[in-house]
Length: 324
Picture: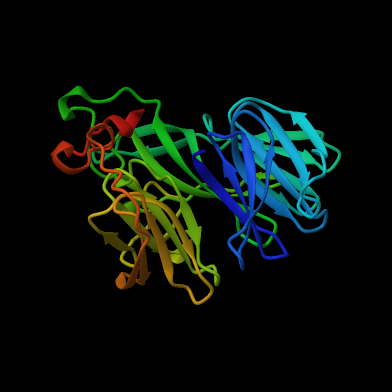
């Protein structure tokens, strides 16, 4: 079934997207009981809870935006809109829905009536390399669009170089010399605010998830290649070449494969790992606990090779996943 994104409603129930099952599974959190399994589309990806409508919105890679009741678990689908292929995440932003597209990192703004009002794309960025020569970058992949709680959303994305690479450096340099780097940016119904980078983000090759602390002071990003979690003070972000000083950055490097991240109410950072299957708990760089989730090992040599893990790690930080 490949469970993916999950969201909690106002009644203490979790709704989980089954990427491989084409369905949404509803579980009672207090009892652990499976309450419903509802087919939604062939390739569901993102999900959001809409308290104003007691509804769930599901974004599908096959292009559908599906609305279904979060209360009546036997009711038919309320609506199925055919938007555009490669939908990724959906966020409720006031009287609008923000729906991201995975490749190209654009965001569709959809009205409550199901009308696409706009499609916003991140602006092209120019960063100087280590020699002071400018390189042009374009957003290529939107890994995660996450609601911030104030009607806006934050996106973590990969920026890809449009400037030919320097063969003398092997194509991969440090800082902003590389063909790709990560960027974090705020998205509203009116479009993208200027993207933010930080020196630490330049080394993040595969930023699969992002989280913001409840007080809005910190942002954390996962790198699925190095097994790295980078946590930044918002004040260290800058819209300049690679940001200002990132002396406030904290890097949680550990021998695990992080795949998801979140803050809980007090600001503790929770990292979910694919292998070994556990949750790691951090408070500003210090591990304060871990929760073993059990289950069979998911170690896979093909996965390690693609992501540059274990014996497949390279000296120059180049992996299959860096570009693909």
